[in-house]
Amino acid sequence: MIIDKEPDLEVVGQAGDGAEAQRQARATRPDVILMDVRMPGVDGLEATRRICADPRLNRARVLVLSMFELDEYVHEALRAGASGFLLKDALPADLLEAVRRTHRGESLFAPAILTRLVHHFVSAPNPSPRRITLGSLTGREVEVLTLVGRGQSNDEIATSLKISVKTVKTHLTHLLAKLRARDRAQLVITAYDAGLVSPRVADQTVQTGH
Image (cartoon, rainbow, N blue to C red; front, side, top):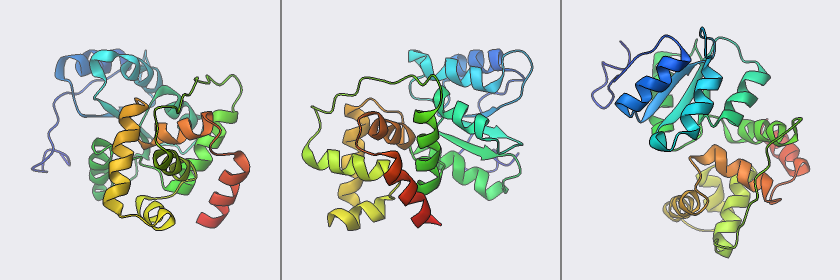
């Protein structure tokens, strides 16, 4: 009801479990999927993992919904490839903004919180590290990626590098394409995997954010 009232948004499918969500996603090719964590059979996290790994759905972004702000849910959602994590008690306006931001490729997490979450992600037991090659990036793109990894917003990156916000967005577009990243959350993970950001820097960023 909330979404269908918006002129720029449309619900194209609904599902009661994770397996059906995957089938609906293949049939309707949505831009954004609101995924519940707890569902019968295939749960939302496994469905997210399957959808994000499906090349036919490479344009779909998953926004995970949960009643509980449990770290393991957030971390597992990131591991599965989700673009954001939202609590079900969010206000209608926040839900709509979350859908739009997710569609734009933004992360739903505040920068400092995102950095902390990804720090947990890369330091968790049995992580799945990727071989990261930054040879295709320009020096400026590496600088932008580093600041993204430290949790800086577009405005903060522009100030740090003394460039315009428009230029920052252009660099981000190039980074997403070159690194084949789905969204900003994956860029942060890439910055960690490539060694551009250390846990010590992340901790300092979180403290500054508070």
